Length: 345
Image (cartoon, rainbow, N blue to C red; front, side):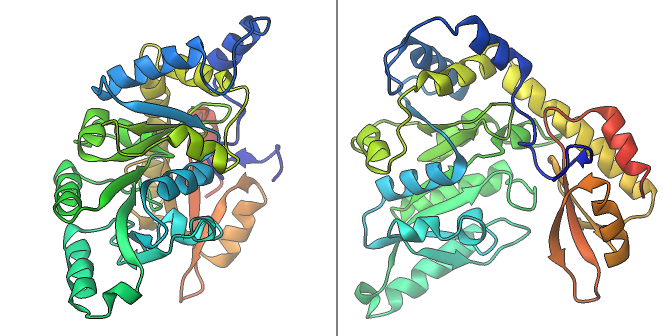
């Protein structure tokens, strides 16, 4: 990808929020003990607990999303269990079989605009345990969801509550991939808050890599005791960063005041500006996303012409030869960049 193109391929195309960089430079001469057992990480964890409304939460910092999913899933379910997920889920499509490589089969559910429905979970479980040979099969032990989904869609509070209920009635863990959680929480008209996520899920992570951090994800277990010795599990998976304060420092900055949510709201405003402009030009949407990922449909020729000037991603190739193109805004997106993009259509 060229740095001369307009940057709409993803939300991690820029280094990090300037305040994080300033904090790193200002504290470069300070020393800290390793592996996240330092006062900087402790401060960040306290701020996250307050934001989640979970004073007893267990929190750990990891480097990236795929790594976080593999470690969390492998730590939460035994080797003979698998994880339920939408067919479009990141762990099923775009993580190169990472979860399976750790020994857990992804058990596919129907995708409804990227989301999983409680009735599909119920149906899967009913069918699974009705089979007299189920002990010869991979047993479901967890439900994996993302918020926002791969299509930028969001769960409503009612949908999330129903999923939580069906999981807990059937002794499944509910795990939420929050790589873009900030953008989901900042979306206009959403009725799901961070405290709702913490109340209804057994584990989730707060994405930093895509929401202003240099790198890093914060894994949250709202109620302690869900996983034994998660710290050791992280190291067992070769995922423990020696200079752990580098991760903690970033979340300490992001959760000082409302920075995490403020920069996420900025991305949503830019996405709404983009969507309004696209609609005004009569361009069809592939998915009606309320978050920072926007999907538009273009002819193959127009998509190719756009790619010459814009870093973007072909999301799907349609049967009629047209293409669904994903355009992503971020904490860094500027109004003039959105206007320059719209001028190309």
